[in-house]
Length: 259
Image (cartoon, rainbow, N blue to C red; front, top):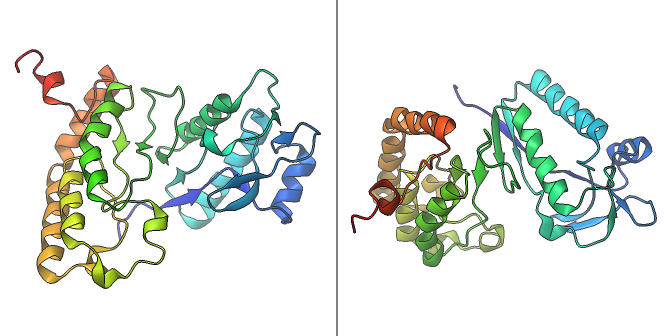
């Protein structure tokens, strides 16, 4: 159908699985102070974790990903997690000089081997060909207000290839028990309109499932606008690759000291 397909992945391994035992026996997992595999509490449960400071472990991980690409025709990966906020313990890293920030940086750097990528957290990888997504936004009007300021800030920090989270908000807890008949349709529409002129746009709740015909058509129109702007956005991205200038720029950045 012409789509590019990316799989959602994270550095976590469910305990008591063949994959966990294989990684444990190879010494590829992050360890607690006592040398046993560390169990990390994250938003989707309790899991062991890839030691991204171990080059052999990282190469094994990449080999598994490439195998999935070859077997299933996958184009790339969304590298989720890597957040230092989950890393609450004191760990033994393969690289004895490493810390939680090193862990996050090494996770992000795996994405450099996969041209189609998206990351949730990137530490010290500004200017690299990595797509950085903003942190999960709430399903709220306040989150809509934050989109432009957060996008311009990301660009100034050296992360030009930024995706503004998901249209309407990507924070999963807002959607788990939602009555979709009571969804704020204008919130979805306004969010879509803001995203349309960003480098990327992603839908969370599918517009054709939750919007009336009028609002669904507005979203379709702005999705088509994003497609029309594609060549220009790509031109901006190529310029940024040479200069590291932001793609999304504030008026003050583009026209300094002109009020």
